[in-house]
Length: 83
Image (cartoon, rainbow, N blue to C red; front, side, top):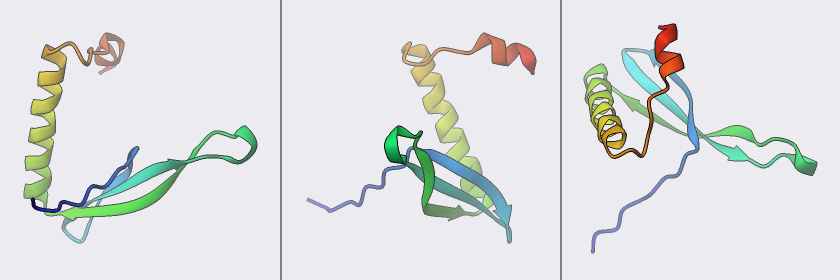
């Protein structure tokens, strides 16, 4: 069986465009001391060309649509009304 590396992230800390590339800075939440709220800590950066970013965005949108159809996610009507 082929070995694959898995990377975990709690979320994206920043997305920015520099030098013609889209850069995603992923973060994990690190526990605070003495019960303090966790703090995000950068752990990996993914860099891709704009065309790759667009393809990734389209793939994510398709997955969001499937999760909405399956009832796993629900639309936030209040957020949509603010736009």
